[in-house]
Length: 98
Image (cartoon, rainbow, N blue to C red; front, side):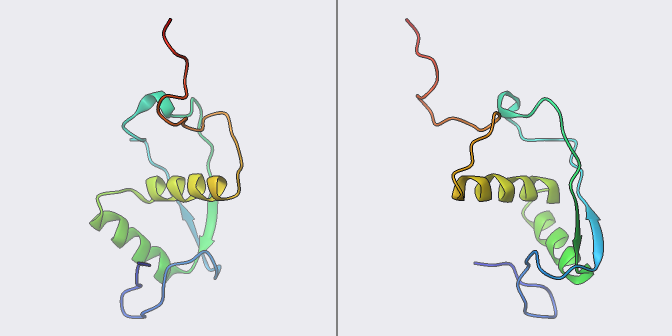
């Protein structure tokens, strides 16, 4: 179910470009074994109304905007079959004990 922008009834997307949104999250995911050793900043431009709706939804779900954007990026890469060094491996696919 897509999130709804308060007062507009539109869904949040990555379309219109109007305001700069910088999401920086220092907490990171709880499983630090999968966390990247370095971070890079990604600056996106987004409609201010969508930005506010996104931040409100994230707060209601007890997530930071950065956590949600990182998950969206991981999902997008997976959807397109892109492999990368810090990608989590499925359980049981790692080294086995001898």
